[in-house]
Structures are given as structure tokens and as C-alpha cells.
Image (cartoon, rainbow, N blue to C red; front, side, top):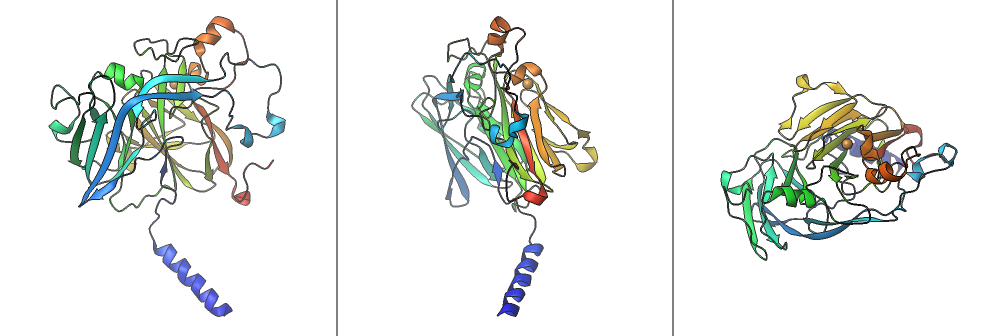
Length: 359
Ligand SMILES: [Cu+2]
């Protein structure tokens, strides 16, 4: 019996070892759902709904970082509280969220997108970075028609791009519609699903101008005072948790108005991809900060060989505050609580991967 068990163990181990490294968790877009699809013949069929969305970007309460920070390390002196308990935005999004759901496809797929317009004005969807036929580019009024309010249109094409991080956003009245939240990720995975990274995260960088006491997005204002990862301002954005030794990929996208130099502590990483596709290995250079300009995506990869709780944040230091305009007006020399484009990477030490923070 014991021998049979041991034999089975080795058989299983052998079979497992012969399998290619498949992403065990898939790509995670923290706080954002993945868009489901149905199969019609050899086509993956998706449904996007463009609609008004009231989004809570900061709830004033839930600190998702706290459980990872040792009690002794927490600063307990006088702090500056935000003037708001909750910050909502009266935006436009897809399928009830800002950003819209993450679309995940495989290279070579045939895809069809039904897009329903529940907005009070025409819209389209542009597939950002995707190599599509001209009349599927979602540039309504030029290469293809607009989708009128109450109507549904269909986009259909084959995924010919290399695996990588791409995006989608409104392509009609873009300045208003994309900046009110009509955007999301479109991720292309390898044809066979084989991937070297075992933890894989997607983070959309967003900046907003919202007057104090308001939920209205001033999309023509450059006074950007709220900043979000996937529609969530710190400390409402979750900590990214990985195991020591894993190969980690973090994909960043930016469809806002500001460039964001995102800095990771404790690591030297490689920039492995852009919105144009993967960067060949010989052209990748090491960095600890990666700038993502509007319209760009950047993938970074590294081996998580340095355990601990590491900051992952924008280095435009105005962008790690919630409501900079409030602080500028009322608290010029205060102690500012962490906010905006800020979270942590928690690399679980190999010795205690069964537990989280040792506290
Ligand atoms: Cu920034």
C-alpha cells in the first residue's frame, strides 16, 4: 500500500514536472472582473455595455494594507485625516465598473464583441494597440459608424497581436468619454496558454480632477487631484501577494492625462513589453522605476527573491495623496496619509508561506 502510494507520488511528480509552466492563478486585475465569454463555433463572443457608473474610489475606511504592517511599525502620532469619508465619481464605464472588465484572449483567437450603448450620446470602442482591420478600429465617424444611444454594434476580428498588454477605450468624443472612465485592459495570452510568470497582475493607472465635495469629473481640468489603481485609491487597493521565488509579472496601463513613474522597492526588474507587444530579451534593460505615459502599457518581470513588504507607488509624489487640492488649500505642512497610486508587493518568505505577515 505504502509502495503503491510512493509510486503514485513519483508518477504524479513526473507528470507534473513534464508539464510546461502554466500560469496557475491566471492574470489578476485586482478589484476588476474578467469579462466572461461564450463560444459560437470557433469564435469567442463577448458583450460590453457602455453605461453611467457611480464608482466609489475611496471609502475612507477599509485599509487593505493594515494586516500586512507589523503593529510596532505603525505610526500613531498626530495624523491628518482626509476631509471625506467617501469619494465617489459620477463616471461612465463598461459593465458596471471603472475601469471596465478585463478582456482576456489567446493569440490566434477569433473574437466578436457586442457593444451596447446605454449612454446618452453616441460611442464606439477602440482596441488600443490591436492590429485590426480599419473598419473595426472603433473610430466612429471616420473608419466605422458610431453606436447611437440604445443601439448595439458588433466588432469582429482575429487576434493577430503577439501576447501582451493592450487596452480598449471609447473612440468617440474620447476626451470626455475615456476620461469619464470608459477604458479597460485587453490582454493577449500565448496561443497554448504557456506562460513563464506564475503571478501576473494588471493595474490601470488613472488620474481624476474632482472638485472638493463633488462627484463630478472635470475631464477638461489639468488639476488632477485623485489618483487610482484600477479605480481604487490607496489604502483601498489590495496588496499584491506572491511567494518567494516566483516569477512575477505586473502589467501597467495608462489612459489618463498624466505620466506615472511607478517605482518598486527592493527589486531590479526588466521591462518586458509595451502596448506594441513583447520586447525581445536582448533589448530589455534593468530598472526599478518604469514610466507609463498616457496611451502606453508596460509589463515588468522579476523573480521574487527578496522577501518582505515592498512599496509599489508612483514617484510623482503628488500622486500618492488623496485629494491634493484639499491639502494644498488646508494643510500645507501636514503629515499626509498615504493615498492615490500606492500599494505594496508582499513577497511571502519561503519559510512561512503557509502564513501571511508574522504578526
Ligand atoms: Cu503618477
